[in-house]
Length: 493
Image 1 (cartoon, rainbow, N blue to C red):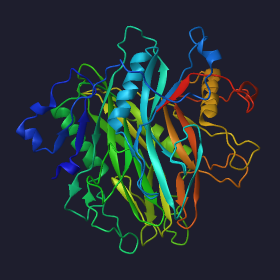
Image 2: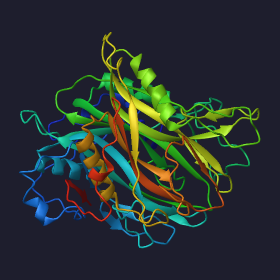
Image 3: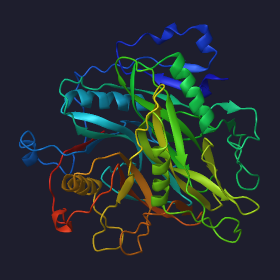
């Protein structure tokens, strides 16, 4: 297997980790690529954009104020070179440099503790600028769409001051190329007439095989620390690039008139320290089809709240696990020739043919740590619930929406008022209808239907999961549109 498709990439963000050049010959045959260390010297100043929801008036009073139960900070890569043409993506610094920047921020802000690292995507404007506070974007069905990946840190107050300040490392697992093109869990869903690549696209192993390979690596070479969280990252397959799958690449361009392939990678974030000898598991809660065997209509799935309830029932029955992340993953789905709905949740990617409509199912993916020989049921009394926070539309319709920082201000106020504990949190892009009234979002849909011949609008929302039931606070106590209250958060680029 070539180095280009090596399965596990380990980036140790520390100066004290054992030199990875000492990997023995047996490990090299395992196709495990280990990268060098990254300097996290915090002498330099972190450059960034000013948070629009934060003013100098609040800065002087932060020490006296009670910190919020949760907030966030965003980190973006730095531009290296603009695109050569309108169809080319600009060149940005790699993911490892963004994580190094995040580690510098964590060292300089010891009053916060990272709950979760999350990759998020912003569409670049016509001027190739990513507006981090913009919540809505339009995806052209025939033109060029350029996207930039960022890193979001979900933060909580660091209550235990005796606990060391976190320093984060990561590793990325890519699916393995297979010779078998017939496995349903492999990347073999490219049907003739639906998808045509200029060069043959390899067949990749499925999600479970990728997780098994990751755990084999973790058992053989335990990471230097304990796992913080795990996420699925969607990577564009570029047949013309020197490295067709590049998990470090932060910017890419899609053309609506061309077919596209996306591959899923698994990224593990860990707190550097004493090895905890942990292995990772995952469970996909797939929505149930409500109109199976109906060849004449599009697939309809059960509501997403039903998916969450099914996930609750699964968690209650599990022994000795510790949940690391709850992530909504959009999975390619279609009908078989007999009309049965198929959700390819074990396939490590999907193809999008430019001339065909496509449907995705919202699968709730749960990543967890399996405790050794633990016979307890840690979630046997769990009452898993969820709430989606959607940016408010000014005037109740149209494209004029509040900023993301304003939405987060409402989320934080809601949490402060209800005092509901957080079980999980994620950023979710939802299809958006600018010509409708209300929120413009079908927030409980577990299906996404995209029409190839029409442009699409999407809006950035925040989904929070809770381990208990919650009660909505008095609306009069929540921030109003005209209010511009300060809070704790920033965006760094």
